[in-house]
Amino acid sequence: MVNQGFFGNISNTIHLMKSCVNVLKKDKELVLFPIMAAICVIVLLGIIYSIGGITFSDNPEEQGLIILLAILIFGANFIIVFFNSALISAALERLRGGDPNISSGLSHAFKHVHHIFLWSIIVTIMALIFAAIRSMGRNRGMMGQIMTELFASFLQAGWAMMTFFVVPIIVSENLGPISAIKRSSGLFKQTWGNQVAANFGFGIFQILAISASGAIGWIFGLVSPIFGMIVGFLCASISVSIIYTLEGIYKAALYEFAMGEKPLEFEQQDLRTAYRASAAMA
Image (cartoon, rainbow, N blue to C red; front, side, top):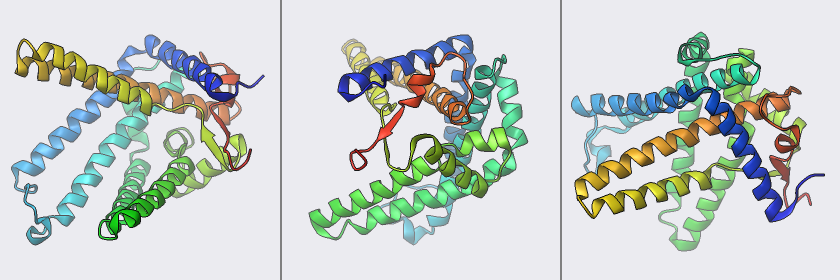
């Protein structure tokens, strides 16, 4: 019987989270992928800043920084997508009964780096489009800004759902980004239908993790403000990295389920009810 309602969603969330944690327990090194991504992004930011590519002026247009900013966004997106590809590759290997490690994940991602590069360009373009749409509402009053934000959020949610399986498809089926988008959209609709809503999301866990880290930092800050900031930052970094890793495992498991496979550590029913018919379809 499919769990329904608020408490059914909570139960499904707990089961899925436990399954993701069980996978992570077997391959704890997977958490290093998001950490390496964060380090590389920070290094990239430092390099561009050190050569004068980034300033904190109120008028970046006058300094011709738009192109450099776009390059920075692309570079960050490429790094994030690359390490996410490595993470999902390793997660898929584990879910298929293998024994992945950092080297195998990175090696598999490198094999598809050309597709990852092109996909990163698309991700960057879409991010700039969504940002441009939101900026259009800033001078349209409160109601105009709200409507513009809702419109942008609607488009972004649709795009996220349509491209949900792009990275797993790239690393598993070796398709280019355009073909992967079509494949992802079709696979998602085939498995859960056209209009669905998520029964499970990692956003709430990220909020809780950051809030808890802030509280821990505040407590230590009573002794020493600097020490409290360091502790809070470290706690937030570690917890967010773990959640990001669990999210990658979750996406890999859903991809396997959508492909008709039975990923290890996961119950078929939990994956089947990860999405449900939206209110419009009810």
